[in-house]
Image (tube, rainbow, N blue to C red; front, side):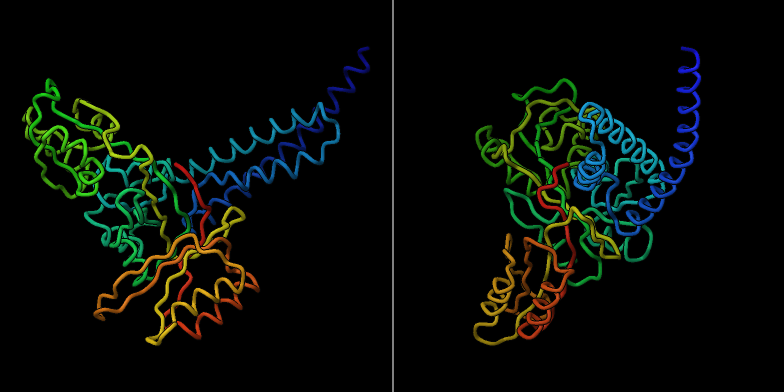
Length: 362
């Protein structure tokens, strides 16, 4: 019996020694993975990639009983790898527009949990912070499910050189925040960002509140906290109430419970990932009859389905427009290359802005 135990311990020690060497190799590879993610503005967690690795590697284990344990082992190993990458992420700088506890601040923190979030006064300042090298990536809103597109961000993406390397959906829950001791019956005036006021229009009308616009929801909350007036409330997130010491008077007051904002991660370089299955392109068409129809027909010809099509006015040319399109599918392949070459024959200005994994909720 002792001989069997000794033999088992010998095998375990030998295997553990090899596993220690392999573990170091794997974590060195995790460093390279993180460097790639930092360069291209990608989050640490790529769930689709992890699922694919587990599916592929677990197929190597034929024993069905042991396979379950091996899957648990892989999940734990990936969790350790992520923790190590999060530790390295401390040096990543993420620009956002607004102040602490604004929805952009919340979104940036959920996409890059351990990164340094850098507040900027407006969208352009956040965008420029990446261009000038002050920050590694910017997280900016591009669309709200209730109020529509965020034109300022779309314009920056069209005119600038940064790439979209991810689009993430943050569910928005607006709350009514007052100073300590205030009650709903005390409130006469509410302040918030215009989009938040629009989202909560019916609630505001029902309560008979007057409104004051603010540059963003967190700024509105700070102004309420600074005033200390029980008759004035802010419309913002619960996180904002905690930051500024306000009382939550009512929750989920926005018109639609299906209210979310899509945030784009912008970086200097264009990324690719196995989880990316959608693309973003922008273009202007030649001032000829049927040019836009021709461009759309080319997309269909190569099997690309449009999931979004928007037009925006060109700032320098009155009554001229550029177009923003989201597609099912990526374009960094032979089919995509042929499609792009054909599109350029009917477009004046054309660029692939980036790729992303659709419906990524944070």
